[in-house]
Amino acid sequence: MTKRVLSVGQCVPDTNSLVRFLTNNFSVEIDQSDVEVDTLEKMKKQSYDLVMINRKLDADYSDGIELIQKIKESSEVKSSRLMLVSNFPEYQEEAVQAGAEYGIGKNEYQNPETAEKLKPYLG
Image (tube, rainbow, N blue to C red; front, side, top):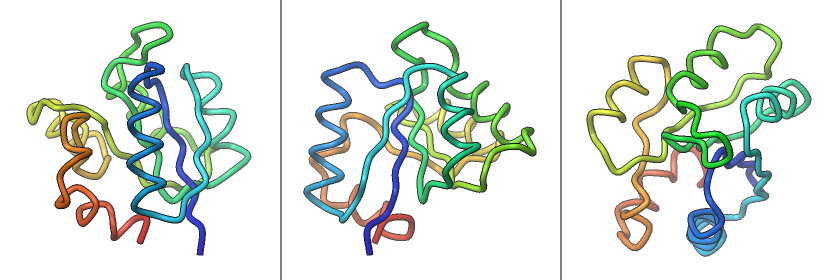
């Protein structure tokens, strides 16, 4: 069964790497969003198996953890699992405290353990 992923705030090279990693390991459809407003609109219309939010959104450099908090506080968005994309454990901890799942880093796409880590959401 195909899972739905929303990738939020990745730059073009990171988007390409993330899409390649996800499609090589899972049966997924991937939507993309660049900024908060677009993300919230998409999440009002569609639930996702996983929403992967960059720590700093590339388009406007807004904070991904603040976006996680806004999503969690919104009663208008459909229920979705949220995950921060960041190489820094301290930001992963902040994201978890905000209500996200412990995420993955951009440097982890080549590790087999990363796919295992995402199996509960996308497997």
